[in-house]
Image (cartoon, rainbow, N blue to C red; front, side, top):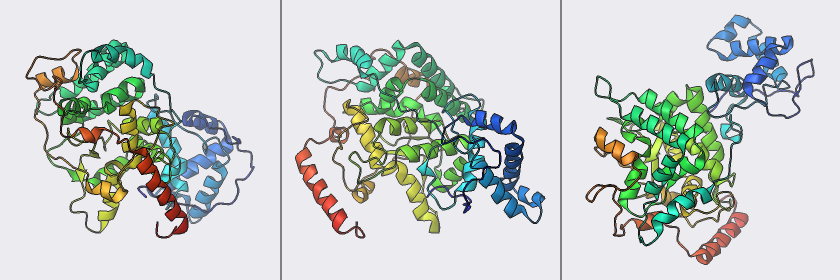
Length: 432
């Protein structure tokens, strides 16, 4: 488990005057205001804050453990317990601080991905609107650059075009030390992916490619030279600790774990069986400390910019974190299915290699593609193809990596082995 917190074995919630929510989910900021206006709730919440911040519990005296336990028990029946936050909302960090005040106290040795700090935001995708834009480019042309078409459709939408231009201009701007301002770049990226409808953001980030020019454009979507790459790769566990100390990053990661939990028993590889929610959660961690991206322009391999070298006896923990991106059947299937333009909520399960084999085939590319500031603007913001000889011109030749972007069409073969796998799971549950 990536996160572990204090777990308290608690009796049933009391009915000592605190407001009951009867399972209703409320905004954590509003829940905090309601608690502040309730003397009993306010007192318990102040006690809880002391319990979890540094050595604050020492100020409570010899009975600190009992007081902390009683505070948590009482708050289970307050609006705070069921509250959630909305991704990209105003005062998001304040909202999340209230959420974690309760939840990091409750959980120890439990999978935090059993719930998400955020309200459910799974939405349908308006493929028809994009189809009207891309259809014209397909007439009489044998090869289509889907990522270029995605850029065109974004430029048609005022909000998408404005926020995309904003983050690109911020991320390519160099400081006096000839480096970019990564913090501002990340903030602009979060604003783009939080506010622009997914039918535009997802088309830019998960567009299907069958040549390296298209895939390189997809890789450059988040301006990786600023938002993603660095001179050296940090240890992944160090990066994870930095993320855990930041309310927004921690929450985005937990939301990603929650919505992209892989499952070999699920029909589509996802525990929640909702590709749209998985992709939406993935875009949420772009612009955070653990921003992931495509590692090359020939596969769908994705990873944060970190490595597990030198982790010693924590090697397994490090690989477990890295595998959330590099060996996640749910995430990969969601991306492939979106690229095929099929329904994200009731998608068929594309055949995939067994988890162990998939992990062996992941490729991590540590070399960055040199890109000048002027060329990057042309790569990210054009509305039409540039001249011959430029990297963004559509290739008329099939790439050798085309198979990396296609779903095999041997469903009967896969269903047979799926049936055999399920029989083995029932017959030998311990071995499986």
